[in-house]
Image 1 (spheres, rainbow, N blue to C red):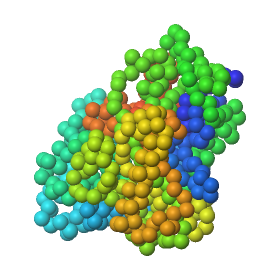
Image 2 (image 1 turned 90 degrees about the vertical axis):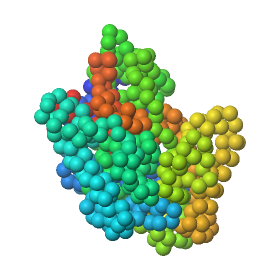
Image 3 (image 1 turned 180 degrees about the horizontal axis):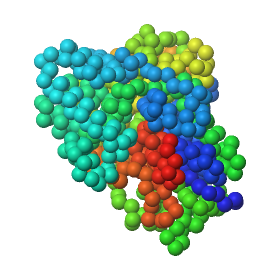
Image 4 (image 1 turned 180 degrees about the vertical axis):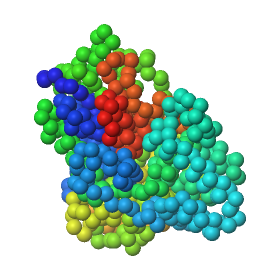
Length: 500
């Protein structure tokens, strides 16, 4: 097949970002995707009359001058992909043991709300928000997506002195230092499903980065995620000499003399390029090159159990839903909840993330008129589901149904009475589903687990040990749509010197 300038393995958001920018710059770009859908976890799948985004629910960095807006502007398509901002007075609602708290945009506003509601905890609350604000400011000055790692000079180190001090802290260590009450620990970490770790394990800097980025605005694409992805794909496929190929799974990256010489696919194709970019996981990429010994090992983030529900004859706005997400926690000990679900495989009373995309945008395209969509997610262990699926598909399906029914019982009891009578579509995905359809190792959602050990200088796009092979993805960068796009943009800037 034709020799390309740039060949990109995988069509996740980092790959589409760097590929669209390179195509705009006149490079002949090929994108190879193993799946039949493009966009990685941002891809949309269809079930009869319903469309569901695989895993993305809301995103940040869509405001003017921010990462996603800058990418779309550079491509000249910012008017084609408008975003709607979720309720700034409460874009996330956190429900702990039945008590609901709204998270607004504006850290000072959020702090003051909590102080009024929990006056006995005023001192630890004020200190927590001081630390978050200082760290967020230093991270912002150091660069977007936590690009603070080139601390080569004393002056840079001084400007990021708090970041350096807290570099290896977990969120729980800060809570303990401040003597934060347990209920407020759960409320302040209420978005922890966005990194799938409890306070005991998550990097404090990563927690701050997420809080600060969503504080600037939480967004949903007005025309839904499939249109966002399609626009980036078209920015590549419509350029002369460029192709985007689905169902082209790379099974080998050929190397010789310290360089990549071509890739082969499971459907018998061989493609070559001057430069190669892997949007696949670094360990997967290393296995494809046969140089896995040169890539440090790391643990993955957990995966999710997800319910995709079509609702008819019921308005979810009458049951506490709207232009926001709802985070449900049965009690305040988030560390124990995660241990119950991931270590003890106990999902009898799980935490839940509840998203209503049809209440985030009224644009058609997701479901029949008058129907609504509810998406529900929680964390679970990949190994259990993978073992069941490979050993006994009937047992695997029974386990999926059992967990689905438990979650539907919980929703009916605590949020939406009579929900089952209004369900016209039910689809359940597990971490094994993620591994199968998104090629996510161990069904992970966010690449390498976001612990202090894995949040550091290596968490950025990088050139491999092979001269013409680069990596940009959730691990070689940061997870989330904005994080992955930021990794793709950063790599493009490094390769071309062109500022986005």
